[in-house]
Length: 293
Length: 232
Image (cartoon, rainbow over all chains, first blue to last red; front, side, top):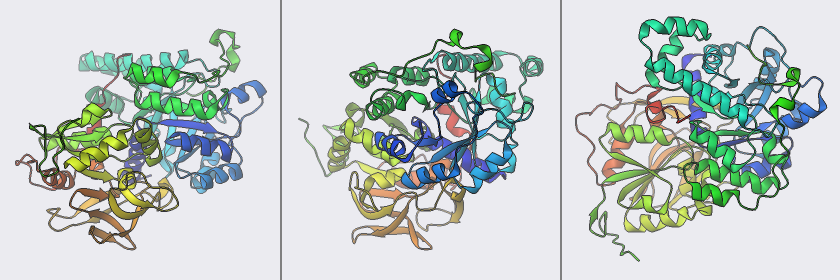
């Protein structure tokens, strides 16, 4: 993509700031999400909680399903491609959706390379656990970043860890003398030029959303107060007892993340949140956040 | 109950001096950045109290469904109408224009404050987003590149609304005496002319030193100045 196209793609993400992007698996859920005030939907066959439960290889969703969702809503539609699977990305680009998530939630197709996103016109969002990972993805052409969190757990602890790590590393980068930046970026696997830009801007040069384990309005507001620009909710909405109500509540709490009275209002009477998973109870080989290089 | 005065931009004797940006979702920091470049105080508006002393209000780009839901849940639609009647001017960019329209193709309208018919997401997907050079005499001092992101199209305007920019089969900018609508995003470019124009429409004085259409100190990361790292 040329520089102008990349700028437009970063700018679409800017227009999503302060909003909630929701995982949906069919037209009915997409309409519930849109009606609740989602700023975009992520179309996929199984939410992460089910991918985790079912096991096996998780791939790009059926394009027919994605197309049906695209037809049903007027908000942007995103879909996931496997890490490194540039042909799945080509298919999603041909489908003319609005954003591709190169996602660790699906089974990686390449254990060395991510997709060269500069070859595409369509924008990409990628997950990151730390600043180095975020900057490597930006170097590859990602127009938007999100925390990885630990998808499908309903447990926000990993998303918090990833956001705090990014913030800490940005603070370190800002405060160190320039001569230390070379070594710091080397040790942390950060592309040097983009690290210099982060040092100047005091944040990522692109929009950074929270994702992975967000299940309640308070979880969403927590991530926003930690400095995220917006929220992805995966299993958290449609694995809860009242998805429409919870979706609206998370939208409210995200918009009013700095207003405890409004977060309280949004948190009342939502029914059961999705059942959560303790991270330590997950066998190491089944952790999703470690996927990506 | 406060006394409303529809004749002057004053409220209870307090001089209105700032322009608000509706801060529910979307391109908020981008607009505030532009206002500050003109020496105008930009205020984030998300509660009833925030409307005090506003000479104007910008409804930013973002997702109109999201913003319209939140407007009605928190009764901010009533606040906007009340202050509009008091004399507050309003400018909607992209999604903001949809919120202001009297008619939205296939959907029920939200605020109905300007007589236009608009169609959401009328160009296609993100891959159909584009920039295009245009010039509006009297509003812009020179031609500049305008940014359209998943933009709506204004299909037609009522008798009291004037067309500012027509491109191909759609209207890209229009205004009534109280309301300005643009389907593109001047806040995503270095172009200050639209913010300057709206500031004057609000009877405020933009800073004079900058007279060019494009602010040379703007770049596409200028918005990040207002969104530094969080507390974590």
